[in-house]
Length: 206
Image (cartoon, rainbow, N blue to C red; front, side):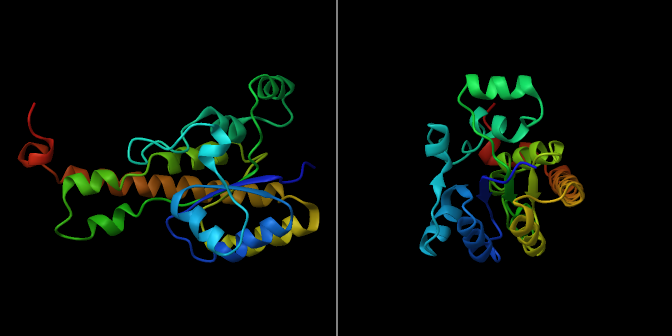
């Protein structure tokens, strides 16, 4: 069984993350992170590498592009037992990412405000988060993906025991991902359906 060596953590809901990440760090697992999550972890004395340093490409477009990079998604989607995947990883200098702890921009919270503008709602639609989550969940045979802080204890217990999580746990966590992203997209579609974009000055001017 391959041991978890690298984790990517990028969270809106940071509940319990400092203890979880401190345990990962103590187990010798490299932690990649972004923005406010990276700052929070560093503030707690946890070693963190910025995703921009890992990819060699800066965050850009007001943070809209942070994790959308082949070094991130190649590291997530590569099948560990596939020789051709491993050959391509080596050829392009890609490194595996074995654990993903990600949750999403709080679209529902932002749009619960009756004064929420269309422009603000749009900026609260997460792109990179769902993309990483779906990639990790698709590759559950190799990747542990966490969207719920309630799963931190079991994941840590299993890693302490064997260096990795069980296939059963990885599959259960992957199912939670698709439940979350489905609910998330449904909420976005439901809110946008009520909007007449023609009446919004931010998007007028065709």
